[in-house]
Image (tube, rainbow, N blue to C red):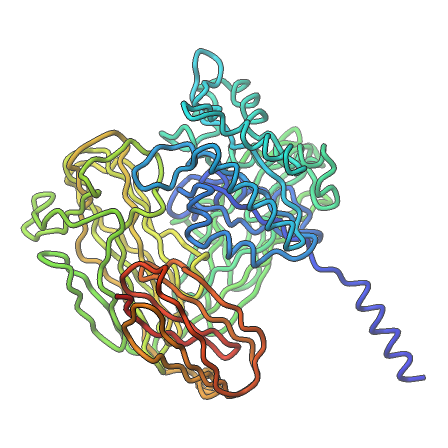
Length: 620
């Protein structure tokens, strides 16, 4: 009888608990998530969660700035997104802004290429058990008279990219949201001046700020509901709308220091009609309307006629002890209450060896290393060093970098394969907490140089974070950038920093100047738990460190574990991966062919449940 009761309880648990639906968004900068500490831009995929019922679904915003359907595939971003799809999940697909561009790097797509890429997203989503939904691209705020122009609606000399999305949808039987038409109607109702002021980021006709992103996401949610798509997961009913809407992870912060995150709230049809929204946080967290203002445990936001205007506020994480600290942000008015989970980890800054890598860039690209970390050589993609010269009237020289060919096209966002790269790797037996990344940057020759600086780890090339970005830098003015990312690196991992430059007008000979690039933090011996994992981790070796046709990877597993082999380029792009499944303890060989590889440096990575091992090889 006792056994039967256990079976009944087990069956009840199995059938009464359901995983949340994942809504995975893939696309370009108009859909992407941004760090509010670096820009006012907000993609509509970032605010979509405001209209998602948190107990039914979760949004994973994998959209990336500067990516076309072509580069989203070639950089391995689609493979990373596809791996997240479980049966019943939804993939919202919106490209076009960068596919329609003409550029020398080859990241744009012709209409036939664009359609082929969309069909691949659709078919592979279905093959993974997911449900694809195509979106036409949101409009640019380009007017001709009082109407959105053809360029604003993505009609170019090569064709109509929005129409191409609709054609693929019809051909493949895929649901489509005509976001181009929905946003066209809305933006035309606003008019050019009001739309630029209230919907779009300052000086930008493509990228929305928070209010615009909320409105565009609402249009998407309303249309999905109209088509009975995700009807159990979405709601556009008037209420308090908060961003982030469900949780916020502050990451790691040294004890005695703090970290802030920007939130926003608005409301409609609130009850009572006149009152206030009370914002409270639990111990370890504080709130303020101003980033550098006074922080307390609560705020009150008054409203009238049931409407709370869009308001931003900051939540600060202040760890008093080392360890994980969870908390809650609550927003309350009348009977309505919204709660957001807060989490962060306090770190002891007294443990570890202060270490750093510095690239002075005052005459060559060499680095200086202090402490047990290793520097990667500076590298360039579709960029090269012009010279080392004085910039901004100071005596020290800077490295001046030029686009290949010397001619800059007019662009409004980063180009996926044009960048300058720096990096560090962590030796065996060590961990490294990156607590500061800094550099000095300037544009030379004109006032139109723009850039975005990003960082990511070799263990997850899809999780890219923004360090800093600036548009139209003043000629010759040096900008000192310093960011505290608080990033943990394990033995064998690589941290990449990429600076993506572009120019806001057609120009020749303009350079982006860099000096004093520095990565610093605390190096520590591996913890006992990590040492145990290291003892169980596989041995790995290769038959040659340089090869032409093929090489053999030999690895010895010390226990039963799932294994995955990856080949990664020196620039951090995933070239190919092989999932070997669950393997028993023993010795294994795996041959990697080189006939289709370009010459250069690659990293071979073996990932098991105990960690990652990485080796560097040279393809001749």
